[in-house]
Length: 253
Image (cartoon, rainbow, N blue to C red):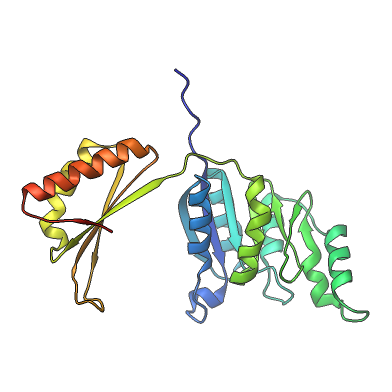
């Protein structure tokens, strides 16, 4: 029997003082998580660091050594505090150079005299890096080995993912099934859920309580996840039956 290769793993490094201060709400992590899930790539870790070179370099080196892919967001703009490119070059121990193709892209975008020194900073790429297309504002991201460096602006970052997707090794997609238990808290279903998790160790079982919504409901959402759809369906059916035997009704969520 031939065993399938394990699915690739990934990590996200979110960079920016504005995220840590609360001034800007990060949405990129959710976007990347959904993007990776659709490709069967397991997002295993996410870190957020400020605009501190030593922290960025340390986090990047740790993540790229332990995951197949690392995605960074933020810090590649034209201002003095956009230091991600510098830090990536330091992490890989290579020079940071103007990329001829990036220069050409921005020369076409800006009129004569508008392609100033600040905007020219956005053409700097660690030696050996390849560009990631930016169909929104042209200024590219870049890839160095297993690290993908992208913009922090959500619209731009999302657009960059289109160019990233073909470069990734994909895995088996994780399927998910959810049951909604109304009027019952986590404590009432915990033992049954634990038993189900022990019986099907290849699957992931989780419980997520919800409060009063617009319809006044309270209860718990039970989520089962796994790569084998047949095994998943069987586990969900057994969980529903076990809860029903305890007088707890469920419905598909």
